[in-house]
Length: 496
Figure 1 (cartoon, rainbow, N blue to C red):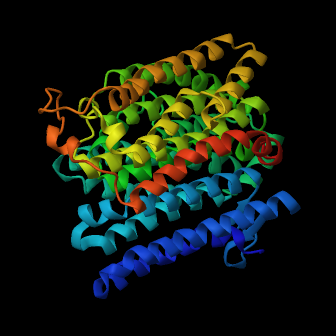
Figure 2 (cartoon, helix red, strand yellow; figure 1 turned 120 degrees about the horizontal axis):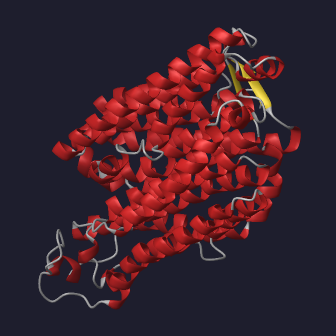
Figure 3 (tube, rainbow, N blue to C red; figure 1 turned 180 degrees about the horizontal axis):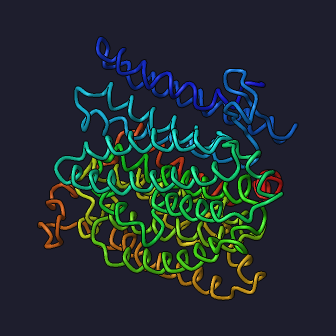
């Protein structure tokens, strides 16, 4: 139990090296080995959360080197919570996209699943590390794996992946430069040690410059407006087995890294009074909610629509960080979980529709609700939660966010959150209206990229291993909504 912090990323990191080698002789072993590694990490995350709830935060000194000299892994309420979200959502997504992985990776299943494990190892490592430079190492591990996975999307995927690579590299460099400034000022990289030193004296310009650079770099990784240009194409043109995984979890861990700076690195109030980072996050977050929602309304491809929707929802998390009150941070963390589950349900449903019809065009969905009832039920649950209709999970994080804004005197936050729900209803209910209320076309439609009429007429429900993970994620939006009080009082409020 004392080693749980390292046992969260370790199975993923080890199997990322083992799976490609084993797959050279037995390609069919790549999927079960990957599934076992992610399940082991999810189990360790759940055990760590249970231990933290009972006994408080736990730490692990890597290699026996005590901090601040050595690298420390720390699991507190927030880290355990985010780790459970990342690993459990990833487990369901990997099951649901197995058929897509076989189709898209072909004879490269070993390298493909090796990259998936490397991606998740980097993300979980970012969550549990208590060292600023080690966070950069895991950040780049996950980013390099993500670039390679997006590149598998053909010619368009290569262009999108190259843009992602360039901007992501700039983001990583900015973060590392900021960490360098903080190290020059404090002489340490351990987060807790940095906090204790800055609480005594945080007046240096190097610390201020470091804070600006760190948050600019993480803003790029998080796709915060106006640093979001890489995300729409990456989500649209990446293979279905890839965008269904990176859309729910990749940028959420970037948001968690930002939150960790507020909680564990910079003194309370420093990012508002000494450096206006919080104010910038609030302004950019409000702008991102509006811009992302408006752009999503204009899309005709489901994947691109959901990509812009992600930009709006990530901006909402930034708003919570910008307000900075305990209730706002709780709302931001709750939205990290809710959006991960909602977006996984939606992308999994889109992948199922593409498997049956070969298209993700909104115009080609006429009557698909009657042909694929379980898939569209999962999509509907995710869409209703995204809009924020009770008792789904999306309602409660938006409710807490609006409350936090009003309590802090930021009435504009409540207005924008309500407006975002209305705009989300416009673009997602348009999809549901076409799927359920339009008849199945008898001839090929005129909608761009719509599948032939025969493809929809002959479409049936996808195989069980595709549908049931999507449906489980959709049902989870309701269950998590009903359990929101338990999650908030037992996990999030003690964590912030």
